Image 1 (cartoon, rainbow over the protein chains, first blue to last red):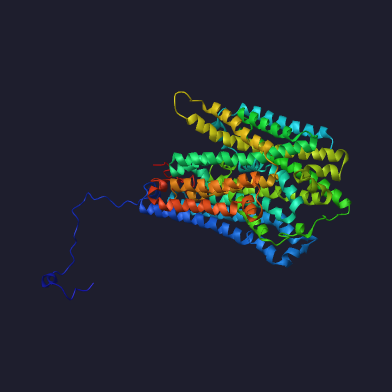
Image 2: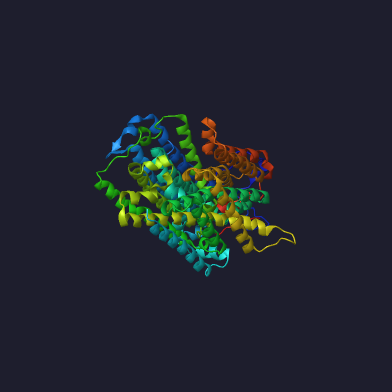
Length: 138
Length: 502
């Protein structure tokens, strides 16, 4: 590092750097607080972790609800306005009967299955954050 | 129809239910015995039990009857009853299990720290339970009349009596196994005859149903009420399932939130499988039993088809199997609801302080079971008959307008206050409660009648709106421990955080 060009004249007389030590030897060492403690003590950080978990779970739930509204919820309007769908027949069975009587059910299960995967991934991520020492857990 | 087979079937199912109930008594002495024991129940057994309890007379008989009568539009009922579990899964299942609450009033108290909210929720549990019990009792009377020719009141009273004996003896409700068995009995009872019936239909040259065009296509009349009714049924069933008292209590039997999700997912599969069948009965009924429409007894189509299409010994045996399945449906659902009602009333009664009237929990529970069954019994005997599946929808609408906002907002929104919850439950509850009374007692015509016959589409927004609005007005009263409650509801059990409610 170069000598400062400017400054009070008396500083310029020192050639080397001076080590300044704190006399407070009893100051606590820096301790890393765990996320679990933050949550247990409802600190600002703990709150942020909790809110982000709740928000990600809520997002997953709302995604399912929205998908449902746009798919199953749109079916009555589809039948009402698109006559081709209503008149379409598969092996003699009208399309609305096939959709409402059979196809909706595997769809609902699939939606539920995707949601459970999503929700459990969010919980796993949260668990890793809170308890990094238990990474081996399922 | 030869009554002998039918009587044998009904007797066997009733005896089996009472017998297993009495047998279960030796294992479960207290309510907590049951709950603790249930924690070792695997998700498959648990979900079979939920399916067994959930599939009521409306599912077993009602759907086929509605399809026979009204066709494609009625397929929305089973879809709604299944989707209700999907909504339960995504919004409620795991957090509700983690809350540790046995019932919705418990949950309300845990979340909002208010006895008043608890009381309002308790009244609603009873109201929803009664609305749900009435059609079960009616269906039982109808079934017994169809298979044995006995007067309608015989079956109604019979089911009510068996249910009360069961609950009072602490039997059926306490055993997951019975409920699980009931699901598989119902599925078998509906599935086996289908093969014979479809075969007979093929041999017969596959006749098409004879019906007006409107029967085949949704909204045959392309009218406003049709669209409103469909969407209202959707709202009621999608959102109402999570608020049914006998559904919620089952979630406590899961070991943790993770298992609660798994269980609900399996329930979705079980319900989806079951609901493929009633449609077949409804369509075949239109072909072979169209005359039921004129006599207004479409709810019996499931029971009538075997003797009409097959006749002889095979027809009689299959009809007996279906009768057994139907009775299993009445008994399991009615027992589950009666137990929930009795639990809530009993808790209230034994809590009454004062030197004169302190009674033990068990005595209170028994008295509550008897009292709680009398009202829907009288209703079932006196009310003019409306379609089983239709009247069940009133219970769904009431649950969707009150408990759905309570659960969803309570789990996901920190801002909910006790005053908001009470306002929403009372407001939504009054609106959804007036509707069935008006429909049954008065039966208005035109749009008013339409709005009253399926109230959910307008009562659910009222319930949500009041709950959010009043909570915002009383913002200062948010319970102080809401952060702690959120930790408890949403963190997975295996994470070792502080779950106490400071």
